[in-house]
Length: 364
Image 1 (tube, helix red, strand yellow):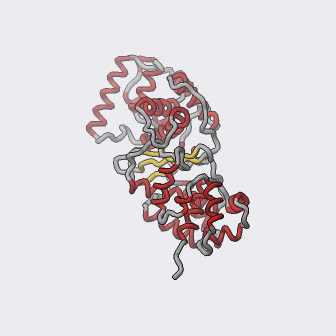
Image 2: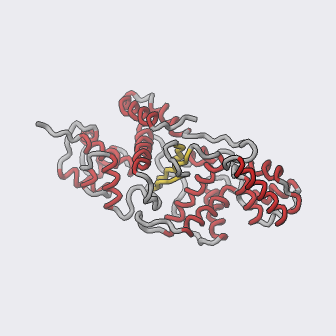
């Protein structure tokens, strides 16, 4: 009786896609023709021991990974055997297994769609940037990243769309109970996935996105192992980076100067009007004004108390109706619709759509 080894082909395809390789590139590296490798990936042929060994060497994984019978098992084995696995969870060792499994289903769907559509597979900015972990260094890092994104100190209306245009994958999901955000990234292939809880306010979603981006840089410079937990200082630094990234010093100074607002003349209503330009919470913008010495201490305390009272009375929703519209899962669903034009991959695309709908990945 023949043994079903389809899972081996599936694993090879998943690993290849995560490594950013095309079918022809992997075939060339293991010295076989593209056609036979394609048949192996589709489960039509079983790979020989030599092919399995060569694939594991090229993709930098153990042969055990190729023999994993489920995608969740594949992920566990891959993380256990590698000091710096294909995707680093940034120390989220306590991420619930079910959430991690769902996230990986979306990641693999994303890679499949990008291959089908011949789309960009890598982030367009570097992950390795040297910086000092003091305020000056973090502000310089934020400025460097904004420069790579071609926005410098300009005000950006939709950071989700901006980040995706540079090859980051931003996913808003509803399966992240009690988790604001988490990320996976692969510095070697410049891949990053940011998962944001869709139930957060737009302001908290934006801050979570910038925080996760900051964590990538904290991890790259200060962490060495997937088993390491980010310390409190790294988390604090990532939050500082997020504030500097969303509210560049020169942009905030210019806004205040153009409006002629003195330190004493800030009011609750005025702060709410201006904070919308930066897409941040009222509390976050108030702290930034204080950091930049743009608000008097009495005005700061008065407004802080008003914000606190509003949060407590309204279950921590944002005061004043948000003016920020974000493109949720825009690139993901653009890829879905684009892939439907490819008759060669009809079956795989149908499975991907079913998976995304089952996981309730919302369309914008």
